[in-house]
Length: 174
Image (cartoon, rainbow, N blue to C red; front, top):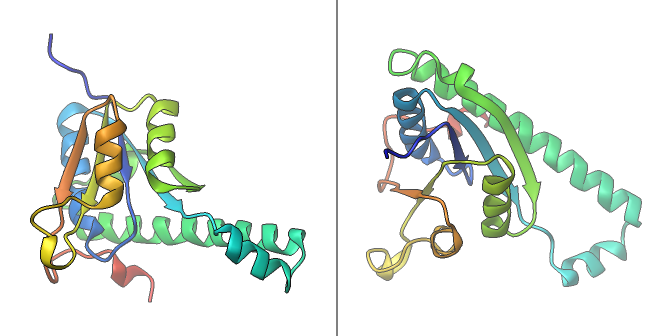
């Protein structure tokens, strides 16, 4: 029995070259007539940072600031997706229609990726990774590594190329 791919979770860190991984998610979705769920995780502030912030702001102000950040990130993803679709219209004119929804979560990235994959019943997780430093050929990014280790779903890791590639989604928001 051939595995069916109907929902793809594309986890993005919004790095400049993350459009490269989106191309793979888009192509797989097109080939399988699948939907794409885009996820970006905002890391929670540490207890120490929260304590420091609470000396300047009350709890409601901190919560409002967090909500503003989530709204901002959602809009940023939408703008980048529009730019990507505009640049990729010859490559994949139906990309926008395949995006079921965009999720912005707050928490630990690997945990939130796995939670969303389960919640949306994703058949595949697609995410990019990039090497850092001397050990770049030895280790996959820590978030990607944690997701791969703990997932019971297929995980497609796209190594992001060094330097500038022909499509970056960082240009959408200056």
